[in-house]
View 1 (cartoon, helix red, strand yellow):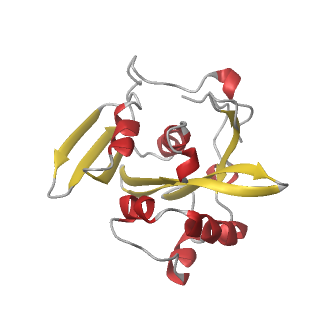
View 2: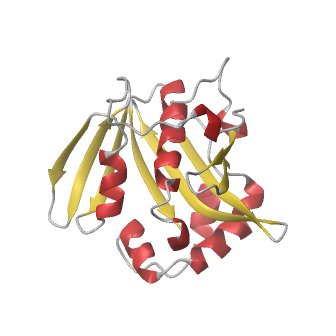
View 3: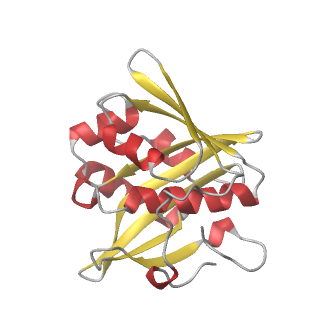
Length: 197
């Protein structure tokens, strides 16, 4: 897990990392100015990726979706984006969020297809865990379509204690955050990250 000295201000969260393939990715708090970038990122997603994340063929981010994203308090409702630079422009390649209810929070992710399987979702999860623990959240819950094996693998390889229950078409995942990660965890190596704020 990440080591940060002092109280974490999730609204200013910023980590720059190098993935195993050498790609530089920034993980940071979503900002109100990101709405156009989020719409652009959503439009670039494949229909299958959208269905796996939202459970239906969502056509666009609605005005209501964007208003909801702008109301994050970065304590009970937290959202992070993963971004890369492309021709001088910051491009969103992933998004992760949690919404807390007491000590539990529902967590979800989406990663652009070209970046899937490269550790982006795993990193988003690790950063969200760090923030959640700072705000008294000790458990993440997620509903994952049974066919979404890559996302189930992210949760399995997180190193966090995990239990699952099968629903009709979904797997209900529960991750315990307030215990040390298991030896199977794939933590972020200090050489792979720059700064946390």
